[in-house]
Length: 172
Image 1 (cartoon, rainbow, N blue to C red):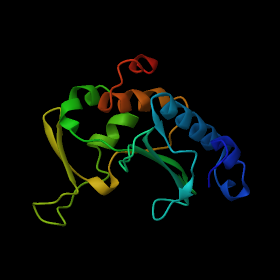
Image 2 (cartoon, rainbow, N blue to C red):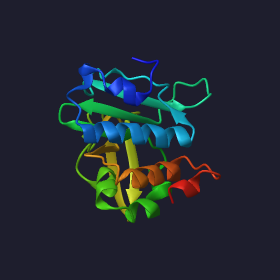
Image 3 (cartoon, helix red, strand yellow):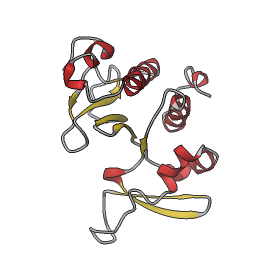
Image 4 (cartoon, rainbow, N blue to C red):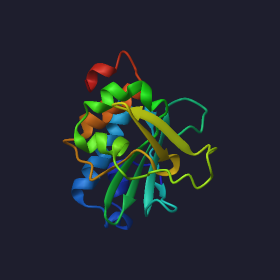
């Protein structure tokens, strides 16, 4: 679905399962991502196995399929998924984040069970506070129960991994 603003798209009855609070977050997150150069191109797509629907954010004006963020629309609420690499390089920052951010990096969710042995291209291995973590890349860095109040923290985290000098001051 595309061609209208996200707010207009969310008014469609097929999105009636999304709460007004979550719809507001979706609009605010989309605007914040647009401000720093990332877009879903105004599209809400089938959620495949991630939820009923989702939005996929890529860098604006770049011919690349690289995904930087997704919003999953589920019956239980919206989930933010951010795509990060080189996590250890940001471990000092992560160790100082609020629990609702830090938990995604150090909690038990997405633990790698080494289902593909010791060599797996889907494993995210990193260190935070001197502790090693192995996470399954297919399900890492999800943030549940997002809110507009937490949006500045998500954006600051995103900008730690994808810095934009002239825009970073918006969220730090």
